[in-house]
Length: 389
Image (cartoon, rainbow, N blue to C red; front, top):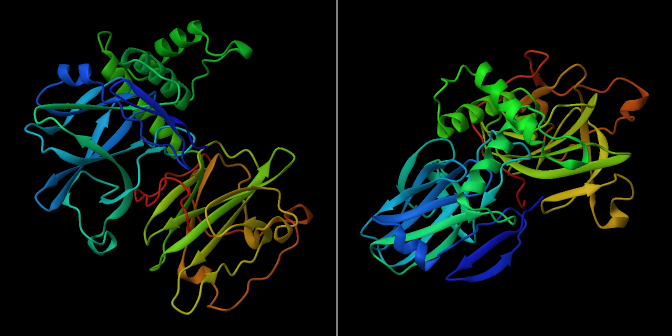
């Protein structure tokens, strides 16, 4: 779900809502006066963030990433003296967090290396340099010595409160139950969970909050690698992926995730509780898209990114109907589906429609085998969230 973010500057506030989580920018003059020696970025959210910046350098834009920000933390992203004019800022959440990777950005298309630290001059074409495009927010900087920008959520936090909320979020992401009924978070359970985690992680008795947050993030990452549904592109071409599953008493389909060759994306980041899930993949080809040979059952899709409830009467609801291949998740908390060249039909060949899985064992899409508790996906993410096709 897209999150509403707060955008404030010099005491002026305006709510900004977009298709994905947006950038929250706070340029409070007093705060800028307190921060020195360059452009400082602050994390006023409950998430661990990776931030990237772009700064003007003559006629070029120098892009640098990634600056890791714990909840409630500020760090210097660009040293003084600052160039007056338009700068650029983007952030994404750590993959340790559940719910998919959220992004803070804007409308400026800038290249990044999503998998490692980088410093580049922004090229005209990202893919030609092995990079990927992300949408940065423009930040107008008018001082040469100091500037401060804060990432925020719709629920406003101080830096101190953001750190507290971040620890609670990481405990939940790491698998600890800190809620009790309708009363929400239980302080006693938080204290018990922290004590239990300190023991299990073998943290030193004098470990500080930063060390606690780092250890919790690592634990949450390990847990995230063992659950959910990850799709990987093992072909030589770009493909578009979507997933379908039961949602309550009905059905839901979501897409699109674009996957470059060698790329992986976690489309479901929670324990797989259903026996059957459904995947759709379309492989780009100059002669037309290539579809999965295994066939499938009809679900609703759209040309743009989509989240559709129900799988009946797609055309009557102004959607398209596409076949999704059933895969078995029986006995697994997580699994990885590898798409290979041999899994796809030739251009122009239509896959067969299968009978509903409830009437028999579903066909199984190619799966990279591993422990019944799930397997860790390859370290090659190409898209953090569903994007417009």
